[in-house]
Length: 434
Image (cartoon, rainbow, N blue to C red; front, side, top):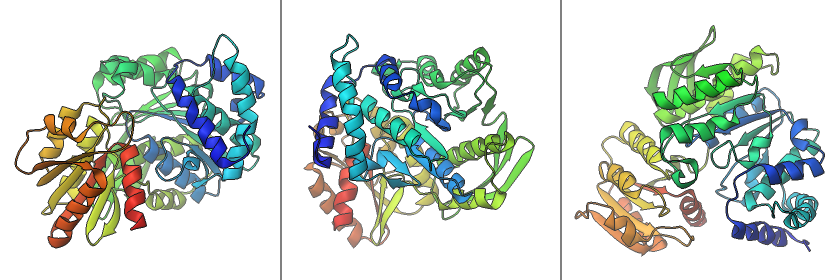
């Protein structure tokens, strides 16, 4: 029986033993039993290799600025489990988690006895979220982030107002495929009949796959660089840029989040809002739009958690994420001595990620953390050039203390801690407690 929040989390996380079970049959079964909550929600669906969380946050803040109440479903969490299901950026309460699970658990138990088998952890959380938002009359919009891929992801039971594909990269290739075309096909699986698609994918082969799916579903498609355009991009404390979308130009937009990739994410968000506005679905002024963008923050994404000494956390957990991090370091930390601590999951393209970090790090330290798929510090070291400025420290707290002492002693130094979001979550909690 589920009586407490701790009981709820223990049971939910226990579903991990089922692993990943791609397919929508279990979700559709639960949606049927719950009265089709996914059909009662005005949703925006966000897929992509990187940039999903930031894009969700930009859209949420713009809608909030215009007075709407916005639900979000994101993963993984950084601070608390509850943040996966949030309203206007505030995680739902422990009591609400317990109440939701009391609805979903009996369905999961019943489903376990069918030929479909029991739902996975992510399917349970998705069902909880959809039921919560459908039953909450205050919610105007739900922005839903895909967990993995798109076509067979449990969030793909929704029919959204707009589908967004942020980027395509080589991640989760054992599940999604080993070519850009295969991965793009999985992401494009979120495209629904007659639903507009907004895309910032860069590879031509990915664009062709997405265009073909959009044509098949009669979905209007808006591709960054073809249908809407970024210009006058400048690195300031954050970034500023101009966006031309439809017959509308948004001049001198400013974002606090740093990096060219964040300009792309913000542009996707603005284009999405513009589509909704042109279709009469939202009412939002240019000032509200600009203010929402400027207020947006997303923890664990080039996040400065200390200025003296300067410490930056960034959940760059795949090659494309590392490239964005390196580009941002080069744009915003010129002249600084860069100390990097890195930990990642062993099923990532470690050699590619590490070689990129070596190009900007004066000191690079590998470490590990308590997670089933975490790479050992030795495994990371073996994928490096093994140079004199490269070290490995098994205990990540020790690694942080060692590098913090160095950057504190050197006035022009910065400590960048990066890698798996699960790792960043632990480090962030530790540093903030200090």
